[in-house]
Amino acid sequence: MAHKEYNVVQIVDVLRRYLAGDSIRLIARSTGMDRNTVRKYIRNAEENGFDMRFTGELDEMAYLIFRAVHPDRGKETESRRDQILLPHEEKICKWLEKQNLTYFPHFTNVISRQGFDQFP
Image (cartoon, rainbow, N blue to C red):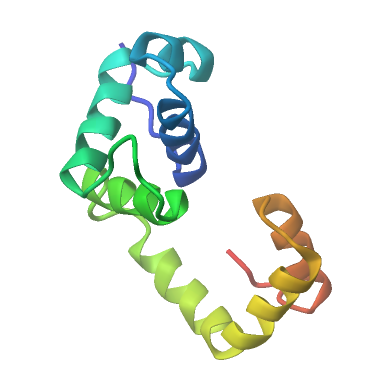
């Protein structure tokens, strides 16, 4: 069986479905992931304080899981991204809030329109 990597957005989907009460089998079927992968992500989330009463940010939890599963992945991109975006963090947060952006492709469109063509 081929090894497949999943990104943070896909892990958020797993966590969201789990919180909605979906079984591991149903989550696996609807996301196309292996049941063991879904189980691994949920177990890792639980080790970081995730449970059915979780009220924190799913994207932050998903990022923790991603970093735990892929500890060496994305460090170069992350550093480059931080160099580009962190100096403008306050302005970006205002854009996101003003336009109520929660969907990543919409966010990247706004960032591109504001002149951040180098966004990774």
